Image (spheres, rainbow, N blue to C red):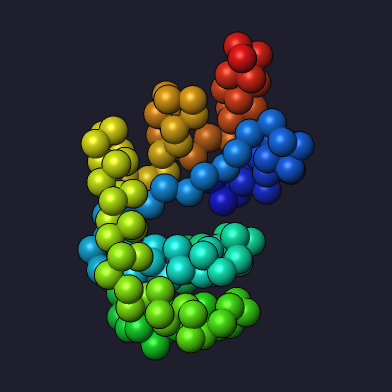
Length: 144
């Protein structure tokens, strides 16, 4: 999706036709849990910075296997969020529970890997080109 995402955002999200929502799939143990928690806590401060941190963590996945709290704090602070507020969220069991619950909801729908896309209740897998997204999105929009 990262390759297709800019065009989907430009043609569908920014025009108000669709809403892009991130749902975590925690399928890499602690690295995915704490990377997701990091993005979640950053997003609490600034939704745009959520996507910035998400992309940073995605592009540096190999670093996550040995990442510790300091790594995630540094990633968040580099994105420009308040360190104290970030750490308070990161250390909050409630924030972690939210991330785990989002994953549980996806797993109940049979989604345990990625990339997966839930478009109007239908789940699509893989990394389709923009034209495939456009076809599905246009059909859903036409039916509403």
